[in-house]
Amino acid sequence: MRRTLITAFAGIALTGLAATGVAHADPATTLHEGTQVVGQDVQPGLYHTAGPREEDYGSCFITWLPYRGAKSSELIDIQSFTGASDIRLNDGDVVDISGCRWALA
Image 1: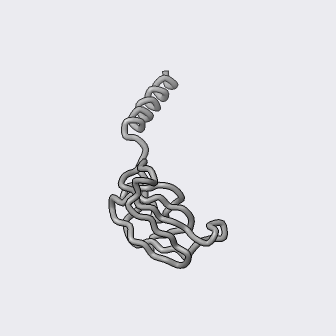
Image 2 (image 1 turned 30 degrees about the horizontal axis):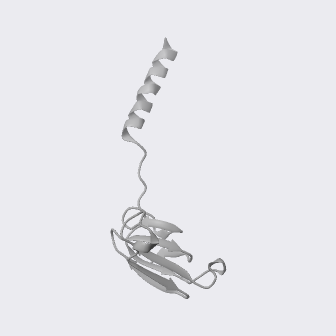
Image 3 (image 1 turned 90 degrees about the vertical axis):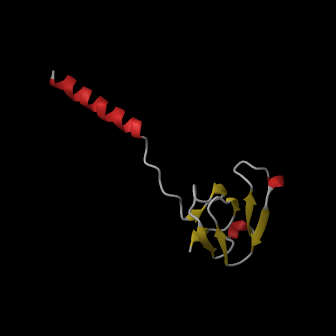
């Protein structure tokens, strides 16, 4: 009987966890390769890079897109960077990152 009670209690606890879901992490403070939405995937603000890494072949790029999943032909703007740089990302911006390591300043 005791084992049944423990199992039933564990089932209730697991059901409660499943109903609440997994805790959502805060948006990141570094940009990663690929597309991300500012305010959702990464925090808005001023980002800094020391410049391209050796594997970036001398430059890196940030492409502003109108929405996640947009094709490169639908881009709003594209910038290339060859040295230490800063960019400001605003809440709602959709950016595609290629190269460089960017961190919230």
